[in-house]
Length: 263
Image (cartoon, rainbow, N blue to C red):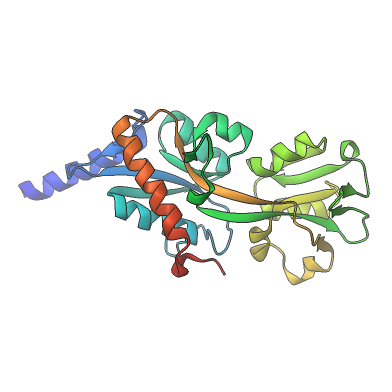
């Protein structure tokens, strides 16, 4: 009976720590390991993410394998991107999968080398592509955007997708980023509520059905490749920084193994 009560109490304590910790470092457990809370978007980007705890995507598998190597007791949390960002900011998540856009780079810490983000330790690479309605004149060529002026063109993308929002804004486009997911973005495009859409190509595998493919066209030239990293909150303790560096090293090495190749 005493042993049962002890285990229950330990479980409750661990849950409270996961929900309320705001110290800027991973939460220690009774066996000395750290509970490392990695918040992953609930978007579906096969084969990288499936939003399914029973079917881990490549990103999650690499994160978990690297964590095991360096002694991090990692917990995967799945929420919308904006919720994950809030959890990072209030200390209820330790890491999130980010691209180093200017805003993300200013707010979070990425693996670095020689003063720049270390691409050898990226988690994965995906691709941003344009989707337009059939019959519209828009094209993306080596010379840039044609078929309309950026300042007159409303581009749809999903909420929190800074890798699309920030460069579009910089190029002078009007941006509608109110859609909760890529499916909603495509519905807005289909109903002419936006002029064109910019989405992650990998998300289209689960959102572009055969009927929609007759009405919507993916432009052949990608907008940009996007590198994703496991970014952390800034200023961890020196002890945590050492372990995190080892974690990032393991991620970079595991990513290139055949069992973690996306295609």
